[in-house]
Amino acid sequence: EVQLVQSGAEVKKSGESLKISCKSSGYSFTSYWIAWVRQMPGKGLEWMGILHPGDSDIRYSPSFQGQVTISVDESITTAFLQWSSLQASDTARYYCARRSGNSGYHFDYWGQGTLVTVSS
Amino acid sequence: SYELTQPPSVSVSPGQTARITCSGDALTKQYAYWYQQKPGQAPVVVIYMDTERPSGIPERFSGSSSGTTVTLTISGVQAEDEADYYCHSADSSGTDHVFGTGTKVTVL
Image 1 (cartoon, rainbow over the protein chains, first blue to last red):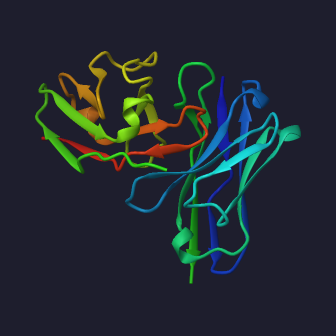
Image 2 (cartoon, rainbow over the protein chains, first blue to last red; image 1 turned 120 degrees about the vertical axis):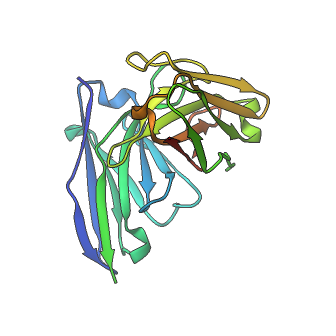
Image 3 (cartoon, rainbow over the protein chains, first blue to last red; image 1 turned 135 degrees about the horizontal axis):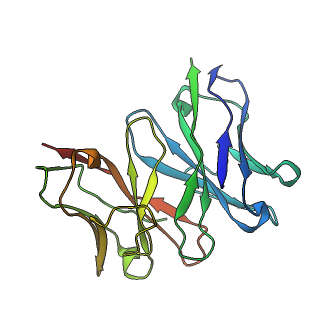
């Protein structure tokens, strides 16, 4: 069974750093791209970036380039999203999602989301 | 980067048909995908490659495409279909993605 399990909710202060995780299981981790998606409170989905665990190829949305860092640890089949200095505007739920392998580019499996709350 | 535009809301009575549009220039060349998101839950894909329905998704969900607009149709709407719906597309390499603005479907 394919599963993406994300780390738990975080409460942080402005200026602090944070790294959240997304652990994959049930499939060949290095064969599928993993994306990160932001959903601010009461708002829509925003694509942040995508990485290929097989070769660590990482692409960012222009809106998020330089604001976050996406990384991967293949040995533990886990993708990461991190901030070096959080802002209140980073308050959101963050999802990881697997990109389909052979029938288009949709996201066929999603993590449960990680709620990040940043207070000023 | 490019944009996908959806109507903010659609209201429909039970048993009727809901149609949700998604417009963007890229849709003439790239596939569209549709997701359903209920409160407190992660999105679930209901249509991929414009018209394909994943296993487990009810037949009342269908997709179509014409020029710069794709449409998600829910035939015989049920109360459980009340949710937010998002379209999604990507570039030819699948490494540059965009979501639509989202549509809230209300079942009256």
